[in-house]
Structures are given as structure tokens and as C-alpha cells.
Length: 139
Image (cartoon, rainbow, N blue to C red; front, side):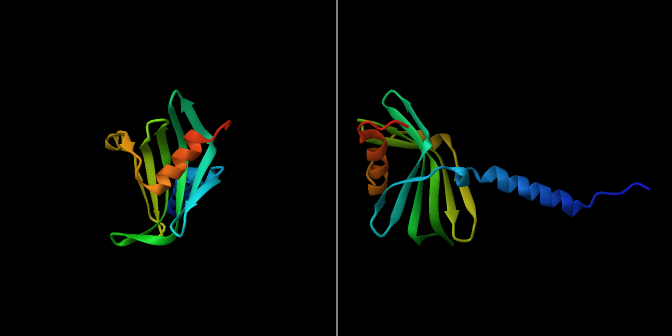
């Protein structure tokens, strides 16, 4: 007699694969590089830093001290891959993932985000300074 597979077994395997594939930020080697007092702690994964001419890219993370209301959700963390144009005071997010208190994540990787923007947020300035202005930093 042939044994039939149970559908919930496939569901469980699929869920485990989803968790494994979506946990890329969890395997990162996060290094604290600064904070905006009372608002966010900033991290860079030094294993992901890539320099090409005046451009430096890296995986970055902002952890909120207190959740920030965004619509019906409370934002607690933002991770992503960001490029900085050293010497030009510019950055561009290449991919961003928002993590909410509920556990929901939202990933954005659109062409529209890939335009260079002038740095005007303190948190982005700290990341820029760490990646572009630190003397003798080798990644």
C-alpha cells in the first residue's frame, strides 16, 4: 500500500525555507557605528562594504529606541543596502526592509529609489561619515 504525503508537511517545509531565505539580515555581522540620542542606534555590516571609486555601499541597520507609528503599524527597525557618494554629501538606498512590531516586514527595491539624494537626516549623516570619512579604515 502506498503512503500519501500529508499537505501540512509541505506547508511546514515551505515555511522553514521562507524563514531561512528571508533571514539574510540576521546573519549579518553588525557593528554599531553611532546613534541619534533617544531615537535610533545605527549599524553597518563591515563584511558587505564595497568601494568603487568615490562610491561606498554597505548593508546598514537602524534600530528605533521607540516604535514609530506608520499607518496602522509600529516601525521598529530599518535595514537595507545603501550607497554613499563620498565627497558629494549624497546617498541612495538600493534596497530597504522595514520591520514592524507586529513582525510584518516590507521590502522595497525599486528603480525609483536609486536616485542620488542629498543627506539631510542625522542618522544618514552618521553612516556617511563612518563609511566615507574614517581614515585608514579597511573593510
